[in-house]
Image (cartoon, rainbow, N blue to C red; front, top):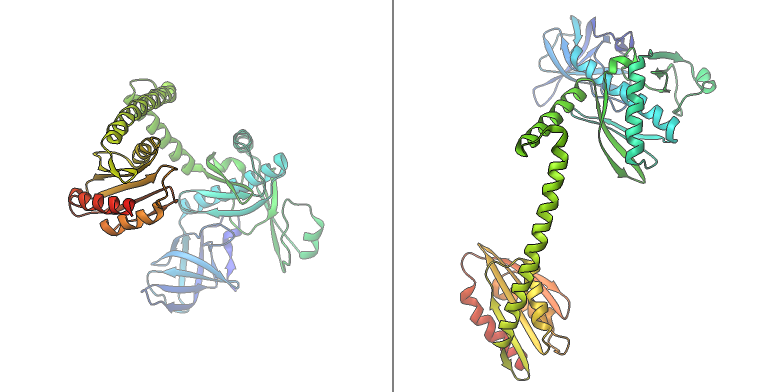
Length: 401
């Protein structure tokens, strides 16, 4: 067993003796100490980093009470070493973890939410709650957490026996615990079983900033950061807002309105562009219909159109088939990308599912659809124009039977 000194008043340094040293295939070494100030990954919290004598420790894990330290060099068994956790890393992790406690405790007391998942990454912390929350409720929750941080109430960690544990009231109890059990009381708003590291008071969290929220498994997943992570996030947001404001020649407080205004103007331009494009396609459909090939009693149009998008191919086919007694095959090529659409009017019996397979075979493409309409696409090395005449001949033969 390794003595866990990191729980003792935020301990980050100690003297220790090397009990074991094992080489790994990747050139690193796992080192076991009789005691340590380096917190091992667990309970959603990241591992500390630091030094064990001259060896750099990049990760620590708890294996049945033995704390194994992943290091960049070996140490001699029996060697006495100075253990030092990186204080900046420890502070960051304790800020995130303590912030999670206060967020979870307040979500429980304010909205009846239960924390069902917690994960700390290098850039963001996520917590999952079993109930959905509105954007307004999440904003209220963020504000309340920061009010608690401002009050700077102490964080207490107590150790109890399993018998004592059964008698205390806390937000969340674990089952089947044995031996000494650690209970954390954070900022006067949360209490639960936890073996992580924590700030000594709520004020040390600095600030909590919620970055994201999304529906997740019937509840909500909230992403947040605390301390310097939150300060850096707000600086980045401010810099982005200033850049947008400069782009729109306005002040930062008016940047959002400027973006919304331009977005509305762009949407109006797109609507007008579509209206005019539809008018041109309608005119083109009439032009093509007048020149349609008569195959028995059915008319056919097989055409290569320049610069059309896939949805515009569909619109053109729809307009052609609205004329009645029509089979339409419309293609468009942009660079190496070929798109095509086949369709028939309701009074024509030819299957478009079968026709699209023939077009796929001709161009080496893929596609499918309904019996009255289908679409496909292909990658080409050259131009498809030379194959259009071949396609016309095939379509005309199929219609004539």
